[in-house]
Each structure stands twice: as structure tokens, then as C-alpha cells.
Length: 146
Image 1 (cartoon, rainbow, N blue to C red):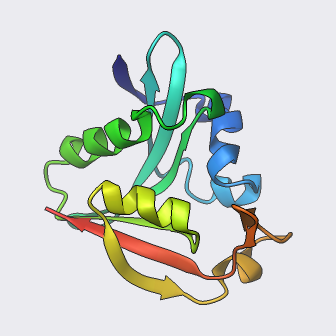
Image 2: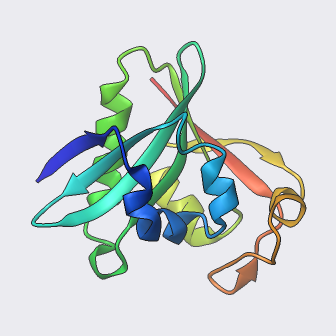
Image 3: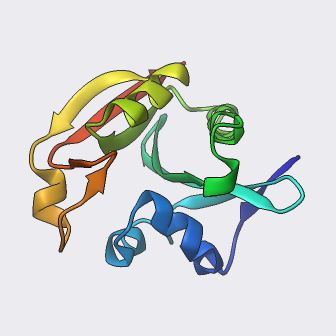
């Protein structure tokens, strides 16, 4: 297993990016300013994009694991890698929909709820967003501190 930084042609991973954020115009807002990492285990299994938001504060903007490889620890391994990669990281944020599966995953990775942005999904996406059969309305931000 190898995790590597992608420095050019990040859009080559658009299929994976769209698994986590299904509107390409939203991805475009952070893709170039963020750093992308891919996890390769006999083929790319997962990717993530991380942005620096302030001194010592990073945000996990996008993380996705190929559907056939989900629930095998790839997502957790990628989060651990990026958390350790940024030695100055005092806090890592991640925003997600208010659904038990996502919240449980991030809780298992050491994140706790920080705050919410009301109506984020309804105000920023051009179509209704759903996860686990639930329409996404508010963005739930979680934080992991060192």
C-alpha cells in the first residue's frame, strides 16, 4: 500500500471526487488550492483533498473510497496519513451531511462535532443532495485536535 501526493492533473480522479461531492462546480472551488493524496493498493482505492484554512488548521474537503473497497480501512488509513503528514496541524476539520453513517465514521477516526452551517446543502447545490436516503440540509463540521 502506498499513499502519494498528486501534484498535477487532479481532475483525472474526478470519478472518485464526485463520490464525495457530487457537484463538480463545488469541487472546483477547492481542488486547485488543496493538496490531493491517493491511496494505491494494487490500484487507486481512495483519495482525499486537504486545504490549509489558517495557521495549524486544515480541512479535509473531500475523501472517497471506491465503492468496491469501502469498509476495508482505506478511508481511516488515509485520514491518519494526512493528519500525521501535516506536522503543524493542531486541528483538522471535516464537513459532512447529518447522517449517522458519516458521523459514525468520522467519530471512529477521532473527530467530534464542532459546529453546523444551517442550510449549507440547500443553499449551495443546484439539486437536492441525499445520503442514506436522507436529504442533506445542514453541514455538520467535525474537528480532530492534536
